[in-house]
Amino acid sequence: MGALDGTRVLLVIGGGIAAYKALDLIRRLRERGASVRCVLTKGAQEFVTPLAAAALSGQRAHTDLFDRADEADIGHIRLARDADAVVVAPATANTLARMAGGHAPDLASTVLLATTLPILIAPAMNVRMWLHPATQRNLALLTGDGVAVVGPNVGRMAEAETGPGRMAEPDEIADAVEALLARGAPLASRPDRGTLLAGRHLLVTSGPTHEPIDPVRYLANRSSGKQGHAIAAAAAAAGARVTLISGPVTLADPPGVTVMRIETAREMLAAVEAALPADIAVFAAAVADWRPATFGDEKIKKGPEGPPPLALTENPDILATIAHRQQGRPPLVVGFAAETTDVIAHARAKIARKGCDLIVANDVSAATGVMGGDRNAVHLIGRDGSLESWPTLAKDEVARRLVARLAELAPSP
Ligand SMILES: Cc1cc2nc3c(=O)[nH]c(=O)nc-3n(C[C@H](O)[C@H](O)[C@H](O)COP(=O)(O)O)c2cc1C
Image 1 (cartoon, rainbow, N blue to C red):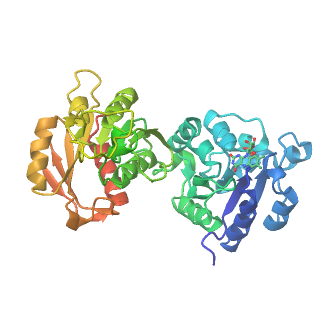
Image 2: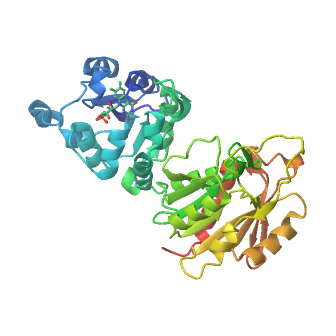
């Protein structure tokens, strides 16, 4: 017995290098008990043949919208209906754009527009195509529409570049199909299609800031961005439109999230202000409190006079600035307090000082390994002084729980 016994998958193969892996995916899905019917885009046929897809699936592969024989037999509407799930692998940048825009110039895109079945996309493309704001925007629209996403993975690409863009492996995609079908109902009526924060714009800051001393040196901190990025991912999965403003991190962009990259605290504040209005703002970044008072265009030279003095000046307080805005204050403003001693007392003082609605406090002393680690033990402190302490959890789980809490606390859109 396979986990997908009796299920029918419509596999849309897009025109990318990873199309050859879609052939392997057919085999993996069938091994798990699914029957697979394939639609190939024109681009896909440059990489793999309909004959190979037909031979591996044991069913005719479909390619043309205006195929008279097909329309009389199993037209585009039946293709869109006669399955349990639609999988797009590889999902090219072009196909994502068509799906997001509701364009239907060929068989694949017409089927994708006509279907109400659950859809899973496995994006695969060059790193720069993936990171392009247009692709990220399209992805945000699609996840907002309830489309499930698997990958892309980070790794070496065909063009010898490294980064996010590699298609998820066939077994990972098959696992995601199982998860998608386990949720049951079709797209239009799935309860967990991410409606918890649907219609809301959530802004998250994440990671450290880098404050330049000279063109080659900077002041930084140990923030990895893992918690902020996890919150962005969880909010997107819950249906929010998410803008993530991130300092320099080595993490992949969460799928379905618009990412703005900055380096300094002042750039972060400007990016936050540009991203408003928002329904919810979560300030999870570890913003440097100070920056070097002076910044030269030339590298400071080592000399006989010894090390130069490093004078510091205060950075803008992003959380307090946004929480105290007279106009355009997000209705729910959440701060993070990373402390090494007296975590709760410091967080209580901070919530009053900063004017935010909720503080998520954690202990980042060396012993906890929180800074840069994968787990986090947080306390939620409300404006009314309420305190809730969560056990040590994976940062992803902290993010999911926090998103559920934000959905309760945020005023209706
Ligand atoms: C050699 C080659 C490899 C390509 N690989 C990809 C890819 O991995 N991802 C992608 O989005 N586009 C890729 N493209 C571009 C797409 O083939 C092109 O945008 C096409 O219009 C996609 O059409 P489709 O989405 O209908 O399949 C590639 C093009 C060539 C020539």
